[in-house]
Length: 348
Ligand code: ATP
Image 1 (cartoon, rainbow, N blue to C red):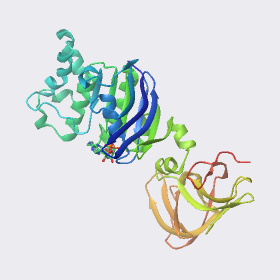
Image 2: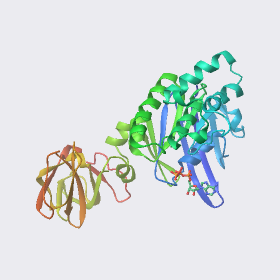
Image 3: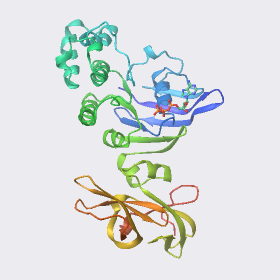
Image 4: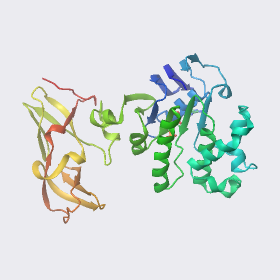
């Protein structure tokens, strides 16, 4: 068990900067999720913690020890990566056993630990098979079992659920979180799926173009986004971001008007989440563009002033398209951002 510290990490690939001056303190026993779009530097960060990639600058400390230059095998980390290979000639049982042999764990403990790890990922009935006789999702779960069978200082997981179908992914999510709480192993988990990040993490690190955008608990990231990138990345559908002008306590854009802090003036962006919009009201005057019932909620898209506003409407809401509609905002939950995209906090 260990804390991890990234101190001013830079990773260059030739002239390209993959990770840019990243500093991060990951607490002992924490479940930390790196979240961001494809190419933002998540995997590179993970590979540097694992020891598969050396930082161009900066220091990595695991469990109080500077690990720059320490071989991946000598860092006490267990990894589950996308497409992480199992040994094809070994049974799943032997694959899961492998790290126990490598670490010279007493043989009498092996069977119990292997079966416990396999049961956790629902592979107890497949231990005699070889990887070639398993589905992609089953192989991914076998790799997960192999990582958890010993108790390392750190778990590193890079999209470990990406090959699973939606139902299995949801159940594995709960199992991984339960397992991590139980084993209390510091975990760094990479995903581009915001639901996975929100549901698993103690804290989320949102990255874009090699740089940290915000670090916070899922509640903080959702309720207090620092900039339009974070605001637009979290939520399903994400926050509506509407460019307009603020003047004398009033925000206006074509087809849209809402209250804003009296001190705001000039070009600003209004942010409002679809769940904080409701049918009826006059903050948006537009036309129905699309109605998508999902059972528990109806997604409504409203066209106003040449843009689309997403609304989570009541489950029973139905409408034909192109009809005029008014939308109200929950005015206690409006966000404002400046021209640089940064959140404007409580202006006076
Ligand atoms: P994804 O979700 O698609 O896996 P990611 O956030 O994990 O994306 P990284 O794999 O960390 O992204 O890559 C970050 C950036 O660094 C990308 O633009 C990538 O093309 C670049 N990059 C990664 N590895 C190398 C390399 N060995 N040589 C050159 N560029 C690289």
